[in-house]
Amino acid sequence: GREWHLVARPHGWPKAEDFALREAPVTAPGEGRVLVRNLYFSVDPYMRGRMNDVKSYTPPFKLDHPMDGGAVGEVIASNAEGFAVGDHVLHGLGWREYAEVPAERAVKVDESLAPLSAYLGVLGMTGLTAYAGLFEVASFKEGDAVFVSGAAGAVGSQVGQMARIKGASRVIGSAGSDEKVRLLVEEYGFDAAFNYHDGPVVEQLRAAAPDGIDVYFDNVGGEHLEAAISSLNLHGRVTVCGMIAQYNATEPPPGPRNLALVIGKRLRIQGMLVNDHAALQPQFVQEVAGWLASGELKYRETFVEGIENGFDAFLGLLRGENTGKMIVSLA
Ligand code: NDP
Image (cartoon, rainbow, N blue to C red):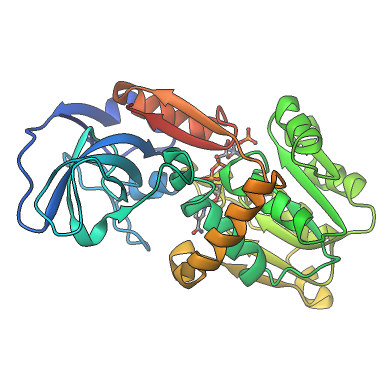
């Protein structure tokens, strides 16, 4: 089977030469393991950080080893109790066609409840990030005005809709194209949205939220964070989920120039990692499955077909070519 290796550490934007698609033998599963044919794997912004050789919350990818990440596939051979050929599983050995997975790292998923790809997005890691980041980290409450950046992406699109469903007074989103902005307002029910390429974020946000915001869910950092600090009301809260605007930066980016506003407004700015919120998983799945069934919550996925296009899918994600969750399909 083929698998993607990182062969050089990118400086700035990743280049095709930093990656290689290599052939690896497919072997029978060892004791307590299953052999999985991957059907979908996830490409995620956090993977850019793992391409650098720096200590972080997830270890860096090793050079000349297969990369990993979320994947869903079908068990084609089992040497583990409780797993049978034909089972579908969610696991962490993506970026490859075949994965030999320890049974304790594989979670069975049910295709009759949701399409398999949904377990990588709306019912998976990015959905839980939105749910935990809004309700637990930002302490969202009914009547809050919420601004989310990266709003047409996997996490952002769910944040805005969850806030609407739970009674936000106003939901504002920013995204990188007019088509995405339309989607936010017309399909996802945002009250206002803008294209951050159209002009200074601080001005566009002020126009979209004349009474200010109470919560900012940050997927982007940089100019967006500075603008949000300007628009936040007294006792506003910020969930710092991601700062994708700087993932390919080669110099440390400038900080928000208006940070001193944090004092008078008594703002709370808090970072989050989804891994800390696993205890919310059952409640999250139950509530989101209900909203999906009722049609209150919508989602999009962008599929890139074929393992050979894995690198292009990742690069496309960083460039904003996705709407909703970016997924590589091997089916
Ligand atoms: P998305 O589906 O949102 O895809 C990334 C999007 O980022 C692109 O579609 C693009 O949309 C946008 N983007 C890229 N460059 C810029 C830029 N310079 N300025 C503004 N927007 C930009 O990805 P995810 O939903 O998976 O992730 C969203 C964020 O959440 C990321 O920052 C990620 O690192 C973070 N995250 C954090 C987790 C945690 O535990 N802390 C867990 C999961 C995700 P556009 O066309 O609008 O520019």
